[in-house]
Length: 509
Image (tube, rainbow, N blue to C red; front, side, top):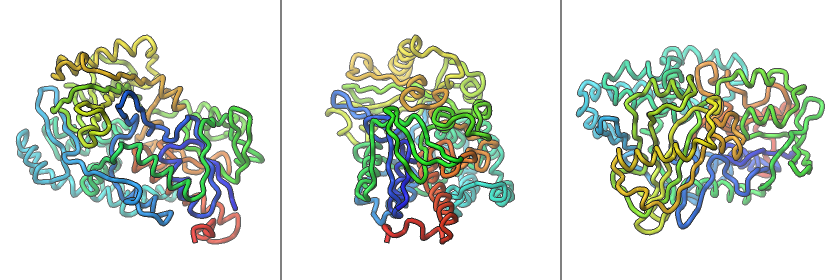
């Protein structure tokens, strides 16, 4: 029986581990922290429960496929709750739009601001459906882009669809009102992308939401982590928590195991890293074993923004907030530029609020609110000293919410307040530059041009998670696991001289 070591237990690591354990491999997950989950961890304090990372589910069929790979039904492990509307988006002038997948309601809301934009909605969605079909229906998101041939076969379709032009440029062809241009171009930010340079291939997300809905789970997003953990252990997989990896063992150019910070070594036939790409290459593998992904190459790659988060437990409820609420600055392009390129901490900010108690009241004491506030900020290339800045910045955000946005008596009712900064992403998640989304998804860092699902430097070393193809976001990360599974099975089959579909299949049968 072949053995696999998985470094990290985020959604990508858990999904890859489930898929391979179900195929008959013996998989062991090594997790740095006391609990599994990675970026999708959970904070529980004084009766308040917070998801610390991902806050919504789209494309439930991609999650369903992970369970199906093990012959199980998602519905036996998760209780999905549909959200409608998906988000409420407040603009700087006090107007707002409730963003939904219902075309009639969406057009009615848009017509208040620009009737011509409302008339263009169906055409925009028809176009983005073609991009969605290429990525999801045709399986390109789960297809490893390991060579230029795969990329070349995708390019003609991508060019026909306009999927390589910047997302915002694509959107502004359809919509005139700035509010609508934001509503349909901001989705790359969900995966760490700059809408003004991320390719329009990522605009399949609005159609993905419309086709599959936006969902939450009873108990919060961490319930999905727990469901994957339960399934993996039911299949016979092993999880070692509080087991930080300090080195990936390499012999004759091939990964052959891992070593923990306590010095324990575990042999394996392959290693899959769900850790940050830069951390994996620069901290866990010696420089002389890396020809392509040298430190110079790693540091010349563009990395995404970071985030400043407040986890707030408040003994009062605020009906102006939906489950997902965006509150926007007047600036859009300039603010994104400040964050991604100038690497400064500007005076203004936009924010995203996740209030799960709107859907699952049990995530806070009765009559109370559990919420997190996420503000996109520059990664640590900014040089911001968050140790000295975080409290004053947090106070600015609370001031805005209480005095400008109208959340009356917010401070007086706070029972829990925890801050999470780019420094915390670096120390707790091993995220290079504190980038919450890793490698930025711009055109020359997409598909073939992202770090590959199989290491280009070391045999039997593979990657899952936001840093590899197809990229960040829960659906994207789960698709990295499927793509990586295909590469690994092909490699083991080639070594054994048997069909890839047969490798490790004894236990699955």
